Image 1: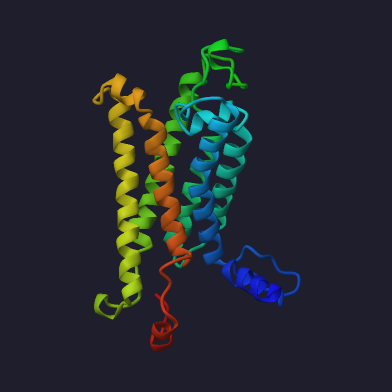
Image 2 (image 1 turned 180 degrees about the vertical axis):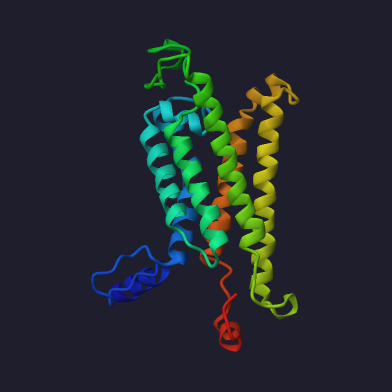
Length: 257
């Protein structure tokens, strides 16, 4: 029973002990699954921390603002790992590598250039959950702007990959399996949801959505969560965690899709 469970886990994460002096994270499917799991887990972990340790009834302003809380290490580590995985991800074509690498670099910029301070001043009693404060108002505007641009490019590139790259196939449309068609629909929906979430955030920042409605419903946090969950789910699907082609179809097919 234990051996069967171990074999199942090894197959799931593409772990092969037969190769000596080899590394585990060299399979694209494994990287895709890990990126998907980490992406989808991040907002939930932060929400749990909010309710358990911050004594707050709802999440804080945005996912990026968790950088300034005791959950900052969680935010930094998970996003940095996602960034590194994106940088080492090769894909099937040079375009896959270049786009994922740029997305990974932008994710690192999101960490290296934090968003605006969560509190108005150091040791602000109104935001006791904020334990980090960055001094220096001169560079704050550039840092926050660069953070927002990097985050937007990061998510837009992931949306592009989901809509245009993940849906590609070496087979004609009428020769593709049913699972491939389902996956393509999911990829496109995930990409569209990412773009919609960014548009809503832009409308909030530009004042098109009234401030009381936008901030009162914490739309930045929830739209970021929608975008992160969408890209994470797309990468899980691409890693064939679910909706994997049936063995019978693969046996009949001359090449994988």
